[in-house]
Amino acid sequence: MIILAATPIGNLGDASKRLIEALTNAEVIASEDTRTTIHLMRALGIENRPRLIPLHEHNETEKAVEIVALARDLDVLVLSDAGMPAISDPGFPLVAAAAAAGVTVTALPGPSAVLTALAVSGLPTDRFSFEGFLPRKSRVTYFAALAREERTMVFFESPNRLPAALADIVTALGADRRVVVCRELTKLHEEVYRGTAADVAQHFAEGARGEICIVVEGAEPATSDLPTGIAQVLALVGGGLRLKEAASEVAEQTGLSKRELYEGALAKK
Image (cartoon, rainbow, N blue to C red; front, top):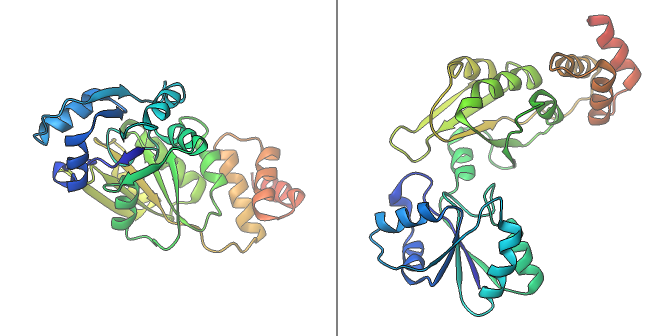
């Protein structure tokens, strides 16, 4: 059996009783960084010395075969560095391979940066989407493709790219879209900063430290009005997209006329 186990995202006190028991009794642990696993076990006072198998983004497809074979005869505990494995962390190829092979997969639930950020954001939680780590390039185009997403959106971002990401949100989604940056969740210097996209971008203009989650308000229900569509086209053009391509993309998203969007944006340039 394969056991996916959530580990603390910052506060060691969030280690569950079930996690501690599993670490104490594990014979085999597959983990994102075996050094982090050793540090966690020492911090929790666990003396068990199981077999450790590295399972990271560069080898997880290859290692999945080995781990699934082991899991036919014994329990394999799977850990990421923080939070739940397979959620923007190694684990998905392994789970998929185990499911295909008929090997049981279960989980020890626990800390999750995604759900923690969503819960404290103050934005609607009834419907949301998790978008994972932001791309390093073409972010204005990326955000513009999500401009009509009505669900609250959660993203991961590195602290050094945070100012640029927030500036791109302002460009693509508008200065008034509500945004929340959650920094160092569950840790000593936890910060949850709420405001409009413009306010938040200004606050973090000099950057930030620590682990970052960005929570973005969903769009108002689509009205498909031409002025709004033209504004979206111009935002994409401002982000570097050609006018014709921008008009096509917005037309596809909204159902508006590509010709009217193109001509309307051209008249406003």
